[in-house]
Amino acid sequence: MVNNAENSCETVSPENEKYDPVQPRKASGKAPVLVEIICERVHCVLYDYAINTVDMIVDVFGDMIDIQTVIRQGNRENAQRFLDLCSRAGKMLPVPTILIDGDVAFTSVPHPNELEAAIKAVLVRKGFLQK
Image 1 (cartoon, one colour):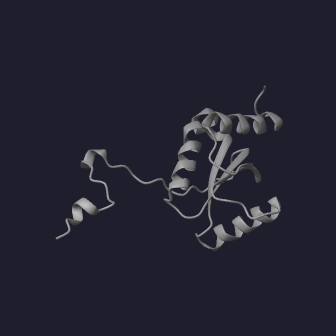
Image 2 (cartoon, one colour):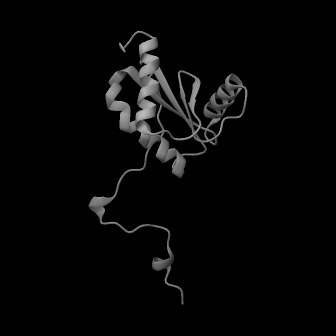
Image 3 (cartoon, helix red, strand yellow):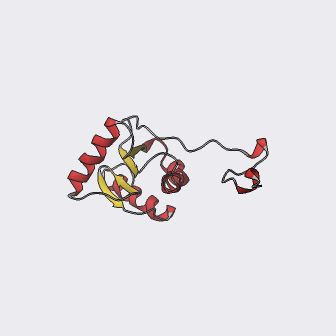
């Protein structure tokens, strides 16, 4: 007889150690820089990894950046945004791709320091930060 609890993929954690899964992000449109993360679907490993990397540096910039997820297997709006970004890039973009102001910045999850430097460069170029 197979013990289903032992063979389950679900982790068993005490109630106080459980966490909320990372949620999709919708940009407010109020920040000077838009960071978009293309993912296949919500809660895939690459999505969580990319979002967590962005979250590691978001406090550095505060309200100067907006975060938007573009979920390829999401709703019609997400699918259209994905196709628009691919058209702009001139190719199909891989998962995960991180874009800054609609331009491809990374086609894999970067180190948080690399992402921070890329965002800072855009903010400097736009005059929101000094070198």
